[in-house]
Amino acid sequence: MNFSPEKIIAYFQPILSADSKTVYSYEILGRYIDDNGEVQSLGNFFNDENTTNEDALRIDRFIRKEAMRKYAEEKRNEYLFINIRLAWLMQFADKPEEMLTLQWAKEFGIPANKLVIEITEEEFFANDTYIRTIVHYKNVGCRIALDDYGKKASDIERLAKLKPDIIKINMDYIHRSENSYHYREYLRSVANFAESVGIEVLYEGIETQKQLDICMSLKGRYYQGFLIAMPQPSMCNTVVNDSVFSASIENVYVVFQNEINKTEVLRKSLDIQIDRFLEKNPFDDKAKDHDAYLVKLCRELSNVQLVYLCDRRGNQLTSNIIPQSEGLETYKNKNWVWRGYFYEALKAVAAGQKSCISSAYRDFTSKDTVHTYSYAINDDVFLFVDIETA
Image 1 (tube, rainbow, N blue to C red):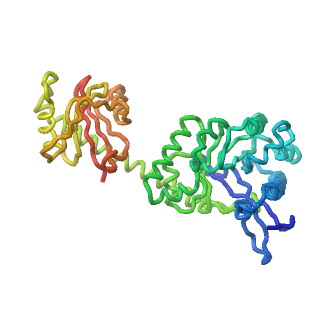
Image 2: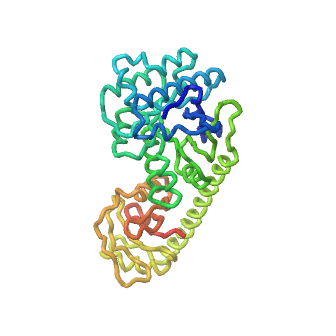
């Protein structure tokens, strides 16, 4: 496709920050005016396998420079996301100071620390040439973002080598999360991982309120998509759908609070039932077999899936006792110190609490959503109860 310069224009899509509920940044996007005078996306041009790298670079540079000029003319102070393909950096490996983005930033008086260099290459190879140029961006103050995180197996290598400030979650996963708990939990794991290594998360391509609510509930500071704000020809008088963003924050708060209230009611109810049982049936540490004791306890509990005992090092002391079942699942001597709920139980005891209830998770076998309730019978024996969520 051939585009005359006067037909090519830069657009800007706002990226909102959850903490301030305001525009954190604008991403530069390419647009062109068709023969009917309509503004069209250049996405197909850049993604077309027939578009040469040289043609893509030529058009991208024109858009990039015009966008940076407009940013300066409009006296903006937000961050500016600039998409860069790794292949475009090769020629600057030994002279990174000559990279055009940085030259234009100087020309237009844009501080380098207001630029976010977004690496868009899907296939990543740990080439020192690329690393040198990206490190130069970081050294002069630019932030680094990785696009489409989670899409390729090489993502962990990209992250380890480039040490980005931000990862942009692949939008396909966000869309699929609406109807699949597998995708929702994958997104949660990515967000937790990013938080643990000090990287901020940006969710892009958000198109529905449900997608926004899901992303907001999974942790992540930045949000982008047609639902929140459409790409716009100017950064002045930005049109942002504040109502859906505010609604999502409220929706997530309500969900969190309801979940906390529900699990706390459940924990207190189990505390009362177990306290009453232990008062009538004191636990005997010296008993050789506690299975019968737990069978008796199960008759006093309601809406539980299974019950078992562990010592404080995670070793299971009993079978899994399944209410209203004649058979027992023998898991004696298995160790569960590696399970998240066991850590939460130890943490609760250390804080002086006799019981706690875990966050919801999927059971390995049934795939049901469950909570695990724990109760410290004494300093060395913990009762665990699995409860299916409604």
